[in-house]
Amino acid sequence: MDEAAIEELELSDAESFEEVQLTAAQVIEMMEEAWVNEKFAPEILPHKMEVVDCLLGQIAYMEENLQSLPSTDFKKSIHQLEVDRLRFLVSSYLRTRLEKIETYVTHILKQEQQRHESKEDLYLSKQELKFAKEIAEGM
Image 1 (cartoon, rainbow, N blue to C red):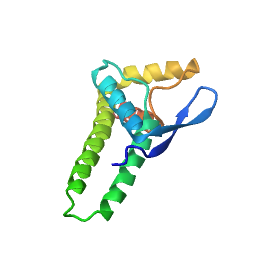
Image 2 (cartoon, one colour):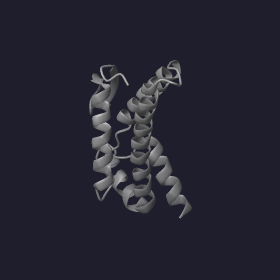
Image 3 (cartoon, helix red, strand yellow):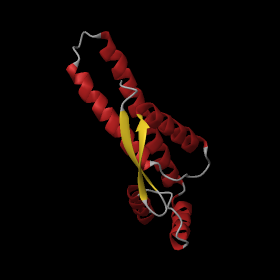
């Protein structure tokens, strides 16, 4: 894994979009923090899809680099373990958010509607909002 590699991450600001240069280690740290916070918070927190997308891009880059290593190289198995750990981190974060949406769909949708009406940043991504509405319709 190339820790010194620079990744671009677009973070949405209330007025504009800015590009921030982050190292792979910083992106991983941000994802770990978002995962722990989401896991232990009783309610859903603002989404971190920019970090998720950036980390998925980093994982894809790492997997491309792993393909070039010979299968007998010991470093390849160590790096593959790191890729697997990062995939777990992302999937656990997303799974935790979906579980909260499934469990508290009416409350979350009501809060999102209030945030939308008061022009605040929404906590759900577009895909999560669509998922929540589908869950609510199915109830």
